[in-house]
Length: 213
Ligand code: IMP
Ligand code: MG
Image (cartoon, rainbow, N blue to C red):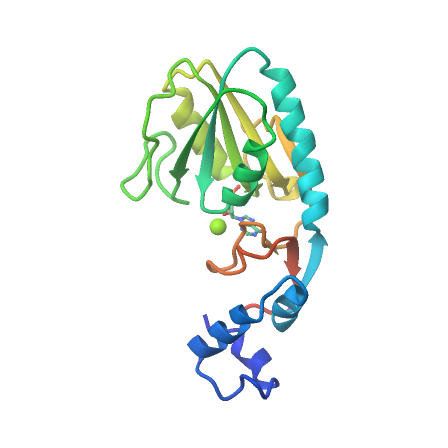
């Protein structure tokens, strides 16, 4: 977690502070007017603004509302990256809804949940399940997850992702029903997405431009 330190060496206001204090300083200055300052320290360039994201999310919300009219839906937010997307989308779906949260590990067998995941609280049998993902990269996570959830007999199982990097796909059994944005093969952060647990709070999607080590 020390890769950002050299960037801050040049800022006399914070150069002498400990890493922890530098973080506190940056966070305390992260306001609406100067929010770009925070990411400039880390060389992150804006790729999708909050406005663009929310406009697209509203469109997806309207599509889902139309598709399931007269029924209810069961949103499953995949922690942690999808929390921003899930809450924005949920507010724009005008249907009876249940929300639940699940975390998945990057490893483990194809269809069994392993010990380090947070499972759903309730049965999804007979429900119109919509899996909400932040980003689909190799597709491994969703391939495993959709097999696991399909065994629990939902009425329907739909995949909705904010971002998709199709160039990176290594599986062919993931059918994505709703995609916010197709993006190039570059690492993105913000709007819930992290690099090493950081930058989730950026209100936009950005590319990390500098070297990350
Ligand atoms: P997959 O199993 O390779 O499709 O990986 C999906 C997961 O990898 C996502 O849920 C993210 O947590 C993470 N991920 C993939 N690409 C990115 C990225 O560009 N930025 C941040 N996280 C990413
Ligand atoms: Mg992640």
